[in-house]
Image 1 (cartoon, one colour):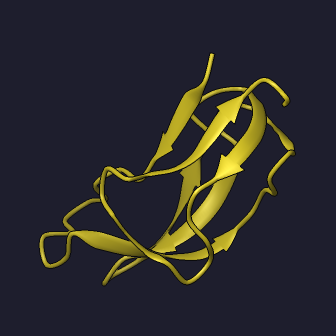
Image 2 (image 1 turned 90 degrees about the horizontal axis):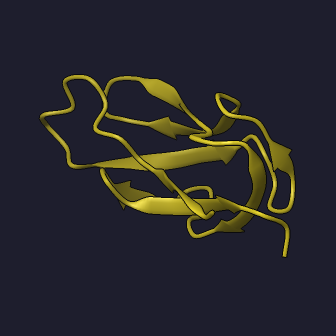
Length: 82
């Protein structure tokens, strides 16, 4: 079953409604386990790693390093291999 990788609202990020993707720690097509760090994002105050919500393959990445994305955005999908 496909699982969305969503950017959660982070701490007291009241001043902004988006984050910048600093870097992907896993690559498309790579096997991931629940809790693995997938990507690092930057808020106006801190850098945070976003973890895999499930175990399987990181099949689709919708946002690239340097992109600004809103909280709640789906930035990738974890699913069975294509």
